[in-house]
Image (cartoon, rainbow, N blue to C red; front, side, top):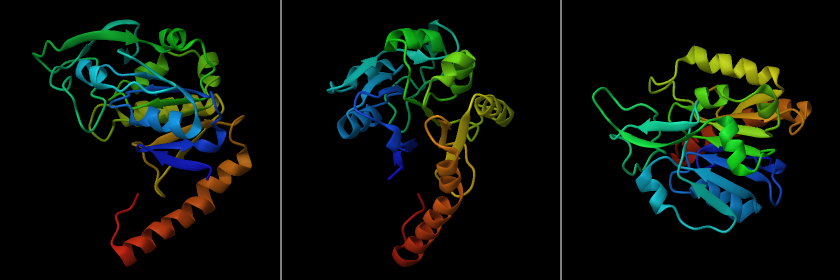
Length: 234
């Protein structure tokens, strides 16, 4: 298959090769990196800001984890103490604590600092599940550095009131101007599982095929399974 949803993130897996560089922003428990390293033999570098989650990350062949938050600035940032404990649902990143919350100070890396840690790139796959910091992190990147990324799979956080929808659309326009094509796993457009693939990685004809007939057939298949087996949609 060309596209797969891996740990809730859509990925163009056909573009991955052994030793492809994968950056896992918001590593959580390491499941995404584990899958990419074991199935595709990618070289994965993960970043997890929660001290507790970072300490619990497993040692995996082909994977290196760093205790740091991907953010808009390079330097100490603050992780809200209400989400700094282990969280079964997310990577628990916020660079600001709630009102009156001193939070926990953790190392912060902007795009340039992250590139230095991973060896300068180019990055074949960038995954971002960083609880609202994805806009400022990508804003910190130069056009040249962003255009060297093969694909970006990202969970935006407008659905929980963290990120204004207008900021997401602004970023999408920038990425489109740099050569990225936007896809999503569901039939309807969404922001909680969005994939941007550069045109040098995904030819235009394959993008059109994926966006329309393939997604339509998948939607029909999901609807049929719901009718027959009562399963929920992907």
